[in-house]
Image 1 (tube, rainbow, N blue to C red):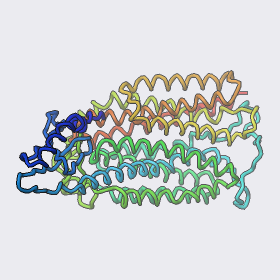
Image 2: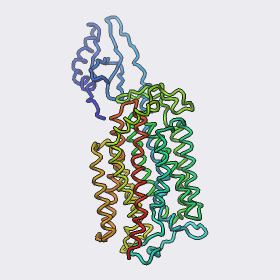
Image 3: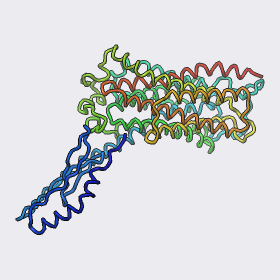
Image 4: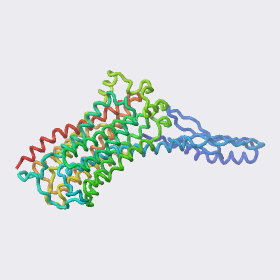
Length: 500
């Protein structure tokens, strides 16, 4: 969002000589002191006059405008009127930062369990857990291959199995969300998301079989999918800037989730105790929603957001019968289909971006195994995940610096990444793992940029009436791409692991 030039401040500076002259005349009894005026652009694009008294305080609004009080000095006496209180301005600033931090934390906590389950996928399938659940991990740098007849160190089951368990419930939720999820108020949805997230950590931590662990991964998927639909829909009732904060938070979840799992296991903590140490994340999610976010009814959307704030409260309350007439969920099926068709120019490229990057992540990461390094196979996999998430976090936090309209360009570049790394798996021409590290970091940058710019463009190009539905409908893009990649990665894993 571009900022208007500080015309008000400039006007004051240019009129200082006039101000001093008038002030001197007033002190000598020559008449009333005329207040200085400055112009500021209004929301309609017209200039408005705002008065500044030489001794009175002025009040700058959030966009750099001005409104002040006027002091007049009659010949006989000076009458002083107090300037308007600045409390409303401070309240708006406080609400802005509360919501910014709140949505960042919601993005962080919502995706955290999902990311940790993917980072732990190799351990879940291999059960790299010390006997008796001791708090250490086998430091052996060269694990025994599961398939000695293959040139790859393959698990019997591809890590794509964990990906599918981590994404298919999310896909189901996102497919059904536009049809009836709005009947459930936001607060119960958030509570359910937090409970599922905590349950996923506990179930996987205490599991003694792959099937039970995958059930825990399913809980993480339900938490992440339900939360994403809920919070992206909720952004329609706050200033558009919160989309950037939410996206940055989801990127932060990738980086902190992967880095925390990598760091704690590298430090010697068992996967079980590492997962149990993360139970504070669901509690933080609930605290961010119920304690940190301000109620939409107290918001002043300002600038580009002109939604009726008074009608938003029922969305966070427990009543659904008072929804604002003409809101997204009151659209007819024909109107929803029309809106959805308009979103395809963003949905299709984002599906391709996520298909390519998760085909790499869960189909190829396990097969990109370098024996000429001190890192074990499991450690290499964790580093791949951490570097990918670092790239995602960086690009998802870059919306204020770089905005991209043509998402299909990112889709093309990501597909080229997939082709290059697949060729390396087949031909093994890359001599060093550090070259793979750089490519994976670049892959994450592309994926994060595609995500944040897609939702930012949708928010800009949809009107207020359609925005809530559009945000909920478009969030199926990444999930659909990830699901398709998981389905295709499973047979690819079996084929490549059968090669001599």
